[in-house]
Image (cartoon, rainbow, N blue to C red; front, side):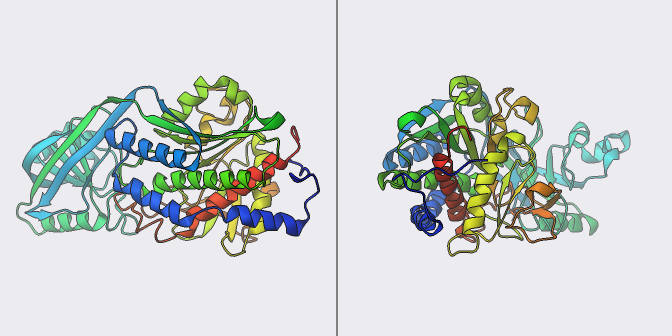
Length: 473
């Protein structure tokens, strides 16, 4: 647990005075600037780390940080595989298939007119089906296509996950193995049903496809903005971060321009808090980090910065704070990791103190580790960390939605939150637009404009309380 220390002026803060100061600091978060940044990032299109669009996004973020007054460094991350879809077209009997989107790692295909065939199922690789599929465009609802490709399919169209409740009007963008020789295009459920109906009516359906894609290697760029510390605590570090690539292959407004915007709004509020004398005279530095590529860049940084890792107080990572399908909640994960206890209790204290007030959240809770994203690069190997370290670092991810369907998780009794309805299981909300071309500002951040603002306020107030805690407590 973290114990409150005297206020910067040296006198103990009364509850009403603490609330007044925290409300003032929270007001420094700009919803307008956050939403504007998401729009600019999403307008660039898929921001794959290591590509020209990824580099433009990094340049945009670096410029915003410099304008705020942060000291900025841009890191060329280690080389990695890069794929980029440049242009594509899919038509069914001359009608454009508006929802069609190539999967990640889909190879180029010259403009071709193919005959549509229905997926016969897992027996597709048997000799009886090879002639029907050879050279065809195959419509399927499956996510794995090795057998269809082995049977000679020239292109795959999939409305995976094949449910009218998910991705009904837009496509899921999945990922093919690197080096794939046949392109896969996602289509919406309704589009897949139209194609199957046309086949059931008999006759021939012609599918015209074209895709220009580029695969190779590239170096993603991570942007680091530093708010310097002061006094005896200046050698310690707090990290606020988010991945800067739209890893799902779409415009990535929620995943993860929302996380980038929240990170920069925490920076904006802390800079103003420091200038206004609201932070202690002895305080750690804060690094604001936008990773060039999810997992890859954060893991590389952790491995290359062992000395900084030894002085880490906490890591707060953002991933998807722009939307939610059924709830209106903020989650902070990792309550099953002992090293996270002090950090998560501090976040919970902020959440409880401000819940329900204008401009803040209503539902909130910690949750067990959900797996994935950049916070796991900082955790020790024994805690499920991905960078192979052995330091016991406190690292959490703050989010408002995860994946494309809700998930119930068993909450440890000791972590039941005052911010979650009593008697209810913890339900992790989801995004209807996860990894899809529909992850646009209009569908996510503009539809729920309060989400980024609330997520930024939660973290900036948590950081201040961490700074006011007695060192070592």
